[in-house]
Length: 169
Image 1 (cartoon, rainbow, N blue to C red):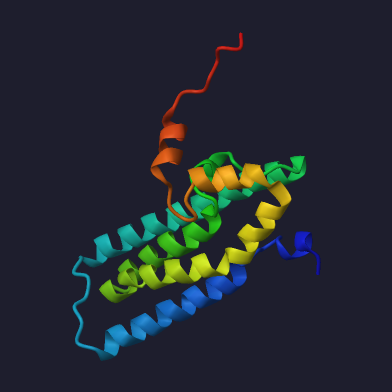
Image 2 (tube, rainbow, N blue to C red):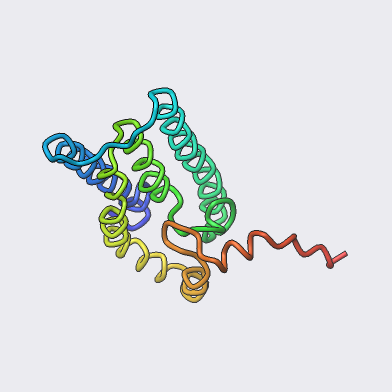
């Protein structure tokens, strides 16, 4: 399998599988250990869970469009959510997925599980990032300096907040 074929889904499927396994383990531990639960009314619990899910799906869809456009041009994706983070699809699973599960099941433990999951996802993308560095060279190195893996860096937020330069007219 060449790099183009293996990068179609990247580490997404294995990362999703690991995330679900970690969430399930933490929910199991939440049930057997005397740990506090998130105290919200059922309505608020589901509203917050739904907001996390909508955020995650919105990010996945937006990322898919930006990535498809960049791939058609043979370019590095740096627009849309890729202007803020290098792996917005993985970040959506990691952050929005964890939030949705944590609030749906009222588990502080699952919410705290985002920390080891962030480390695991960071480890999973090492080879993917090395491949991108080989393919895009200094452009990718500069991109990594300006953007976070799964959460925006201050530099990418500042850059996104600046109005576009329209002085070429």
